[in-house]
Length: 108
Length: 122
Image (cartoon, each protein chain N blue to C red):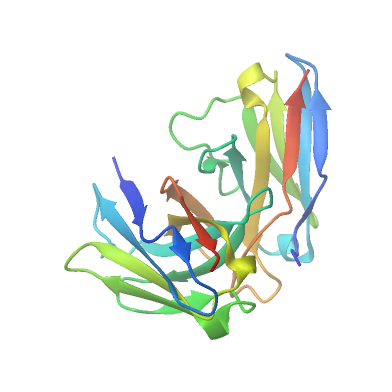
């Protein structure tokens, strides 16, 4: 079972803002990274570190963290942002990676 | 541009060993800044980290798979491999290799292979 919990699905109107959350005790110590996965494709890293975007990731993607919760915010969601999103961090021991349960984002 | 490419059989029989290789191009697997990892995704389900290794041979594995997993490296060929033994249908998944940024506090996988589907069936 995953130590990082995400809401299964969220929806957002085109151009509006959506926040995707990832909860787990280990997030009080370790930061989360975030991945976007479209059907039939490999995951793509969109946020890492405190709030860093790899080259080529639009600035409408941002990350934040508070307590046991990490968040990915899409400001001004576009149709192409419709995808599954996963968080990733360490487990409570700090010795292993763990992925969140995933959130399906629908852009209306 | 770094690229990773998985290769291996797409079908494995139950109780046998699943073996995959990840060829790294556009960068050195011997970099001191990274680990190299395997992640899998059963059909219709989420991502599961399998394990990661350092170029010098150090490894760390998902506790739930540790007894069946071996990850090894071949620096001369710039590639690393996954062996998962005693497979069952539950091991059917798309298997990805990825570069594991060597950070305890800020973990992430920044480059991924395209993935390869491995089915376990007789």
